[in-house]
Image (cartoon, rainbow, N blue to C red; front, side, top):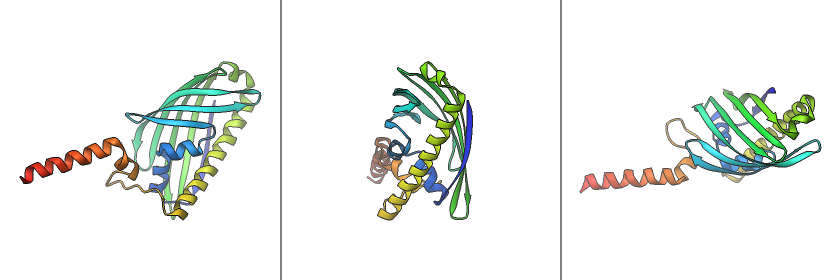
Length: 186
């Protein structure tokens, strides 16, 4: 099943890129997402609870961001399974700055199996479009809330994002850099 869409977000491309790569923000905005745990190497362990028609359940899986070309393009591949069946996903996302807005174009190829596959393509397609619309609306709302509170995301192609700087790896790199520079000074 292939579906796609386009969205305009009233934010700078760097802010939108950072938002689309922030596990905490994605956990809040992806419909049904209960957790998104970084595993290193741009991989995440994800737990989602969703229902489509009468088929409801929890899914656990792994997603990985690949082919990232900040801040304009990335791909995501992953899959998960649960009592209602399984899902395999390949998605691609393109971002383009247009004035003060970011134009986001995306395409997703999903393969489903098990009970959930018995629902039918029309219902799954309609549900997928509804969930995508809900995600982008929640993303806009979260970005606006963060901007109003002064906690807006930032991204610069010349340096690490705020999230990367706060991560254990970012702190380790910073520590080693300061330690090595300190050793050279003595």
